[in-house]
Image (cartoon, rainbow, N blue to C red; front, side, top):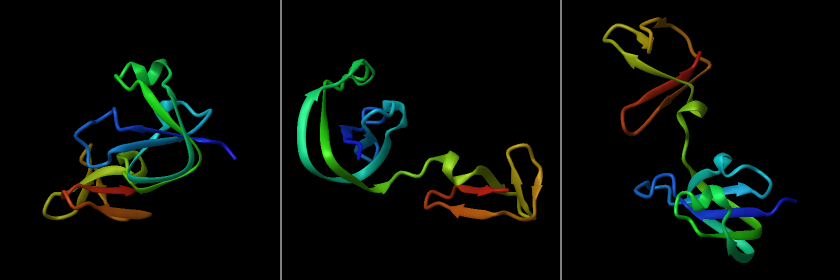
Length: 114
């Protein structure tokens, strides 16, 4: 089982999702933001050049770690949609009459997979 790398969310320090977590061996770009992390057998080490570029100098390396309350990215939610008063449409103005799934966010944004 791969160790987990945990850092503060250096991508967006103002985000409600304060932590980034990814498997050791994965690119830091693949880290997912979450609100909470629980970890076991943790050691701290200097970060690699990627994280250091964001002024993140130390990372936590855990034998086991689990992220909780992950941030959902727009890509995972599908295409951005809007309601024009008569029907839903995509960013190109194409009418959307059916979806595989629909995500309605608390900020009013609408996403779906066509």
